[in-house]
Figure 1 (cartoon, rainbow, N blue to C red):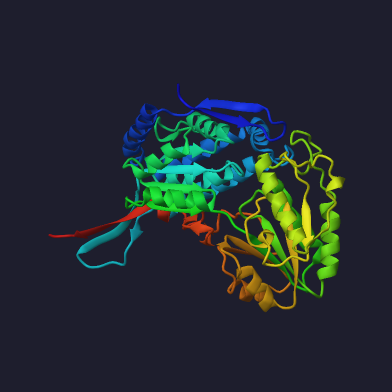
Figure 2 (cartoon, helix red, strand yellow):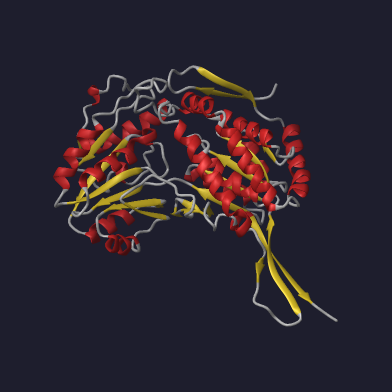
Amino acid sequence: MPETLRTHSPGDGRLYVERPLATAAEIDRALAAARRAQRLWRSVPVGERVALIRRFVDAFESKADAIAEEISRQMGRPVKYSPGEVRGLAERARYMAGIAEEELADLRIEPKDGFTRFIRHEPLGTVFVLAPWNYPYLTAVNAIVPALLAGNAVILKHSHQTPLCAERFAEAFAAAGLPDGVFQYLHLGHADAERIIAGDAVDFVAFTGSVPGGHAVVRAAAGRFIGTGLELGGKDPAYVRPDADLTHAVENLVDGAFFNSGQSCCGIERIYVHGAVYDRFVEAYAALTRQYRLGDPLDPATTLGPMVRAAAADFVRGQIAEALRGGARALIDEAAFPASRPGTPYLAPQVLVGVDHGMRVMTEESFGPVVGIMKVASDEEAVQLMNDSRYGLTAAIWTSDEEAAIAIGDKVETGTWFMNRCDYLDPALAWTGVKDSGRGCTLSRLGFAALTRPKSFHLRVTT
């Protein structure tokens, strides 16, 4: 009997999805089919690939309501917010389709008498995408759509928490008319995923997940000369200057910390506030946080859903308890959120002050609804604290001075630097990280580079 994948809904703990894991024979057939299909797909003109991706988006959006509810049932996001992920996938896919013909066109070199010279963007072959549960479509589309536009085949392994997302991708691609074998999904265990990476049937690995998971991918690929794109999360900071619009900063930063129950790789996990506005900011921040309603993700009134599993919530509880023992002060009374109970995925939002970088809650990724706020005396102190991290995915500043924002941003070790916003991915900009947040780049005009190889044509013309 094959092993089985079982997905329990965080909302009520019930078994929601059950699927057999792929057998060795099924894996081999899928890899061989991808190789065959890619040989034909690469010869399809880019304009036709673009048209197909646009049809894929249309097909995906036509099922938006059902897809949104499935997201909430699989990973616990409140149903009032889940439709945003469908819109986000459409935005990113359409943007990449819109620039594909120009970016994948041959790169012409300056004229040279007697020669024709150009560089062609060759697809790599088969791209293996490993996607997480927290933003199950947005993390996956970053690699899937550019890979297909570039002429690659794709095999998707999705998280065991969100297996229906892989199936929805396949359904929409089939409706769009994508040839068989060009996109496939496999429900896999970790060992089989590592064997695929270590084998010779895939040509690039796009992984989004934890730092230990990233190390496992690198180890599996160590014996091969293939590329790996790694997006490994963060401990993203924000800095509020004295010239910031405080109302706007509070609204943005509460949402940036607690949306998706804090389960966002680019969510705000630590905030540094200039002393001149610290007290006012903290008071307003805590007051707005208290307005969340924690409950059943399928209830339209819920604004904060459960975390993905009880163990994840208990991990965050442990960070909070440790900080309190170390002298931190909690501003949110957990009793005001009756659904919050130890041993369950339901966890009240928490705002901590009196924190420092000797506490795990300020240095170790929480991936949950908690944020620490520290007072700083200067831009220089804020920069030092923002850089005091093993992560570097995004960082943000709230200020009315754009020149100051750019100057400070030049000093911050991060992949994306925001001013007066956070926790958003613009498909026109490179999505990338530094340090333990990973390596590589997706989306933007740079996003095709890792999914293609340059091939030079050097033609001497004779008469």
